[in-house]
Image (tube, rainbow, N blue to C red; front, side, top):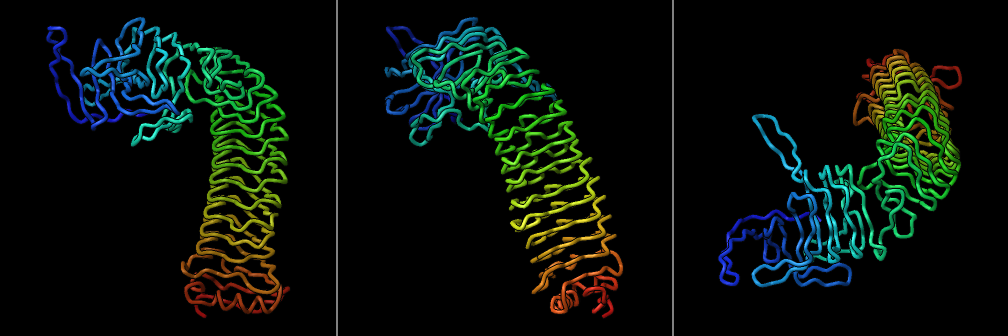
Amino acid sequence: MKIKKFISLLTTAVIVTGVFAVNSFAYGNDNDSAYKSEGFTYALNEKVQYDSVNIPYSATVTEIPNNKRVEIPQKVTFNGIEYTVTNLELDGCYFVTTGSRTTEKNKYTNVEEIVLPETIYNIGYFSHFPNLAKMNLPQNVMIGRENDYDTLIYKKEGFYDLEHISYFNLCPKLKLSIDQNNPYYSYKNDMLLSKDGKEVYMSFNHSTDITIPDGVEKLNSFGGYGFYHVKNIKLPDTLKQLRIPLRGITKINLPNGLEEIGYEVFANSKITKITLNENLKKIGWKSFYGTKLTKIIIPDSVKEIRDKAFACSNIKSVKFGKKLTSIGHNAFRNCKYLKSVTIPENVKEIEGDAFRNCKKLKNVKILSNNVKHVSYNAFRDCKSLESVFIKGGVSINSTAFYNCKNLKTVTMNSILKINSTAFYNCKKLSKVIIKNKDSAPMIVSADIRGFKNTKKGIKFVVKNKKVANQLKKQLSKKKIKNNLKDAKIIVGKKVVYTINAKG
């Protein structure tokens, strides 16, 4: 839960048994206020619900005393109303600005232990406790419950807003203890797991050598100490999803049952060699980004390679599996040592920028009949590329081969459409072989640069006179022919048409 910002600060005089006391609080809306008492700050709410449990008056702890041991109270009374303490939202940092320089500071340098009451149902944002070593998770607590701010109804959906929140971040000494009756969590090897032990949520293990408990199927990193420091990790045979950053490792054995390598798992790691298991189905976003890998064999079981999966790596060769259907955006972008690419027959999508700026790439073969588009910038700036073979009936999108300055030959078995700027600035492109039998591909003329800056005398080799006639009509359009230099349409070995800027 993210505590709402409060818009006004008031001071109320409260007389308790004849003693005049001053308590400060702030109001956000009719059901939301902040109240300070005995070193604690609370956000006060009405009509809060956790699953089926209704709390008429609820308090969220947003600040605590900077003491060695802090015990969170179960109740707090304000204006004669007793509020149950149910929620925790603690950001332990603040910022100090001196001139143009802003420095992050820790509020709670003295806190070593936090004791939570049984009334706590939710822990939201919690970070920056440099010396916190002990904290308990009571019976009903869940970390990061999702809620609807309009109704303040919390659900059994842990780890809300994962893209922006890392739970227990910058708590390097923290160890948890779990109430044995908590229905959500268990704790093994200093790791927070689901109650059934099938999913790891976060690690508080400081060791560089880690063993993941047997029975774990999903390995996540939603906070805690993380896995960046790990140098050696043993994965269980039961593991299906690997979703933790492992930047410190140099080698790893993947279990046979692994189905997914997730977001940034090996990104910028020192790993130089890996064998992908045969049951793997998905290679996630940036999973091998920036690695020193030089060779990768994609198993036949893999169906999807996500965006930037191998981008900026040292890959020299890649062998794709037979069941691969999708190559994501920027998947192999800036792989400066990659020399050749053969796209297998079941691939349906080659997304934008997939192989952009692979500077040593010389040969591309697309063997699939299922690819609908060679997407924009897919092979842009591959300046060593010399030959391209496309088997299926595809469309070549704008800028697909833009600025491939050494491209000489393109062979297309059954091409549907060549979009504007598809081969712009391919200065050595001298032969385009089109094997369509019944009709010429559509040459898009909305932008005149489809074949601009190709080689003078470029040859379009076609199957028959019918296709030649259709192609001539399109290439003879003023907007297109003004960018061709003595282009020739050839049937067999005979030049049947010549097209140039003059006529």
